[in-house]
Image (cartoon, rainbow, N blue to C red; front, top):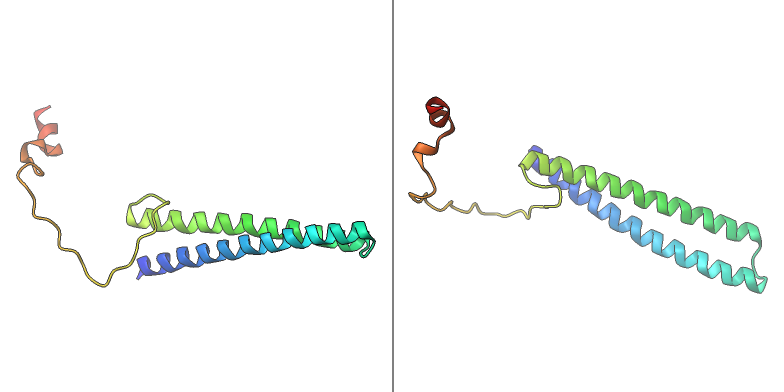
Length: 118
């Protein structure tokens, strides 16, 4: 249950980051358009300043979304024992583990036996 919640939180954070970045691109295009209109005398300085303020707010949203995404990925990675850059892909079936080979398990290399010998 916790894994599922953390996974959905990471997915939601990734979607929010993508939306914030799209909003930033749109707002930057609007500011550019407003600058051209201001140069032609079609808009006032106040209009341009308002658009620039909205651009600054969009940048702040992207930073907040990046932070939330990083936090969600770190929480999921910590829970699963993986790195924060790995987003697992859910599967409907469980893979059967490969049988242990003799070389995979060396009973003489156990930490407790090595400590006892030391």
